[in-house]
Amino acid sequence: MFEYDHIRTAPATFALALPLGLLLLQYLKSPRRISQIPHTQERVLILGSTSGVGRTLAHQYAKRGARICLVGRREIMLEEAAEECRKLCEADRVLTVRGDCASVEDMTKVRDTVIKEWDGIDTVIITAGVSTLQPLMSVAGVTPSKDSPSLPHATADAINYAVGVAKAALDGNFFGPYIAAIAFIPLLASCSPSPSILLLSTVAAIIPAPTRSLYASTKSASLLLFQALAIEHPRISFTFFLPGTIEGDFRASAVDTPLNSPPVIHEADPNKHGLRRGAVAARCMQAIDRKEKTVIMPVIMRFGHLLYWIWPAYVEWRARVKYNFR
Image (cartoon, rainbow, N blue to C red; front, side, top):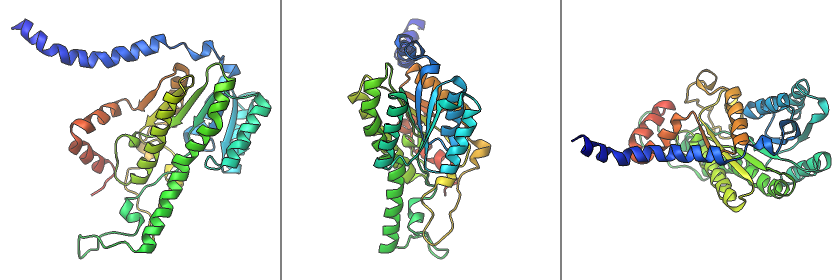
């Protein structure tokens, strides 16, 4: 009886152990990046470094002694971030370039700057992006009335407005990384002994969430783009970082204010319940150093992704609860 039970449970045990074994093998066989690029010689480009995780990453790389180039759209905040970094390292190790990731001209200007100042780069970190906070129908002003639960038809103007919102989300979350990839992949491949790119995505790119339809779909598009690029450019180490909700001013970058009505906040305050920026930034740096491919934070979200394919109704219910969506 014991032998039969042991044999019966062996496949399940193997299925659980195999992923862990593969992760351990990958970790052991990958050469530590520091052996190829000492921390004080690393040239780091951070796209989207004026706030949030990008700004925290800038601080941590400055403390580590790396050369850092900060890029952001908001000039005052960019200079504030640069001054904070200069207090943590030698001032001449910090570059700033005001620019928008979705602008070809700005990204080529950034590329020209790092070539002129550093003869290239070793690490590109893409944290820039925009948020969306509303259910898609709300963006177009389509909401049920008190007298009827059915939805009214969207007007042509409302649909056009929703299309404009989608284009803004695409600019920030897809075309920004898209342009950055084209601008910097050839430079990385030609000038670094251990080139690396980290894309800060979101767990919503793999587990759908209500009120995040535009955000999740545009983030998912850039994630799949970079996963394909990782296959096309095996010499470059690609890291895809998928965190849950992070503390900070995520709502400030929302591009989907509803038509003719104030925005409605559905989820709990991220500053009370979100991941700490410092912890996320530290894990990003660790993933780059270890050449990890896909990082989901917190780890339990990995099981959420798996559970979505096994029991989607439960995951969808939990998502509605999390985002207070009825």
